[in-house]
Amino acid sequence: MALMIPFLIGLAIMLTLMIKTKIGPFMSMLLGALIIGVGCGLPAQKAIDTIATGFGGICKSIGIVIIFGAILGDYLDKSNATQRIASTLLKVTGKKKADIALSATGFLVSIHVFCDVALIMLAPLVKVVSKKSGLGLGSLATALALSLLTTNTFVAPTPAPLSIVSILGIDLGESILWGLIVSAVDCVAILAFCRLFIAPKPEGWFTKSAAAKMEEQVQELAEEKEQPNNLPMPSFIQSIIPILVPIVLILVNTTCKMVLPKGSSVLAVTGVLGDKNIALALGIISAILMLYRSIPREEVFASMTTALTPSGPVIFITAAGGALAKVIDLTGVGTVMANALSSMSLPIILIPFLICGFSKFVQGSSSVAVIVASTLTLPLMQNGLIDPIVAFLSICAGSGFGSHVNNSYFWVFANLFGYDTKTSLKTLCVGQHVMAFAGLLATVVISLFR
Image (tube, rainbow, N blue to C red; front, side, top):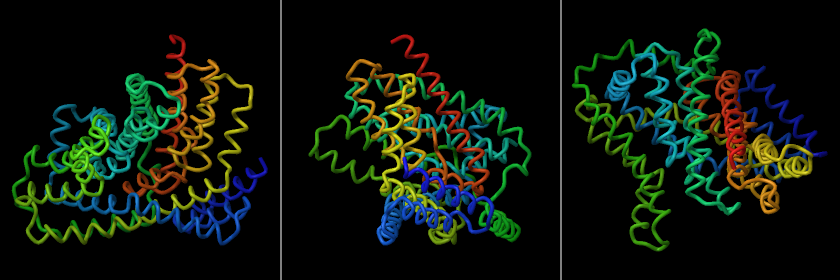
């Protein structure tokens, strides 16, 4: 437990720098990673190399996705496709229930699409729905971001639940069934949280980052100078196809991996087309083909350059979070905490939840957290102390507990919607804990019948 002291000191310094100074999250996280790494016993050069490795790993994982998502979003915005989709959604649900429409979208989309990719693609839509419905952006953005996490957390074939199924050796179909049920409960809890806690807050409660404020000022000036677009507005089908193309390609690839044997020629094709980078590139091509009549000619290729400007901060800050997570993982703090929890005399259903939650708290990765929790929970399951499905659900619920600034999704959310660290903690992170405890409560109820 000696590792916990330098870890907590480093974390406190990092959060203080983020919230109380103007250093900003990028430098704060890199400094925090160095302090935690050296404080927990890593040689200084090893800590620096690990920071670079973690930073590069995140850039490799989502850098191109963020850029392509920004380009696609720019096309949808300039062609008024997001306006068309928003108008159609609001006609179906009514303005007062726009949060339900976005939450349902998040619930369905994230079963097969990584939540960060889906959030990048759907963020422009949230902003337009907010303007058209009159509902606050903070409430709608949080509802979508958290709903994307529900099925991503509980329902295979997303990586985290699939890892748990594999380690615990439980039935995939049964895990999907119960995962969908608990995800639905979580969505209801999320909507209640957003409506009762976030929606009533005044505009001043949601504070923007300095970069977002500057970008808004530039955007306002650009809109003042912008000539009215008299080109025809695209139809709903034309507007939705560029969003559906990458989602469907990724979904087909995931499904084929589950049902087709390795080495299949079909898998070779779907593996390329369903790669998240290629799928989004094809989404951009479909946007050009579907929406070119609704975009000023000079803007068709200009978007490929202008969309890079807002992408940079998202990539760099998210990558800094990856660097922090990599350093913390290497220190072994997560393993120390997990072993301590597994030896405590706690209600058995809480042990997988807490191991996963505290592992997530110290190193940021849900995938790592669920693997640690599954490995330490397996002996309990093998000795008949906990039902396999209950263990599965408890671990899944725990992956939302302990989320904070060392998680890359936090920074994707913050930068897409322009919120500073404090606001993102009050919205997304608090909401993730609501989701975690609602999932745990649903798991406790399910355990009574098994």
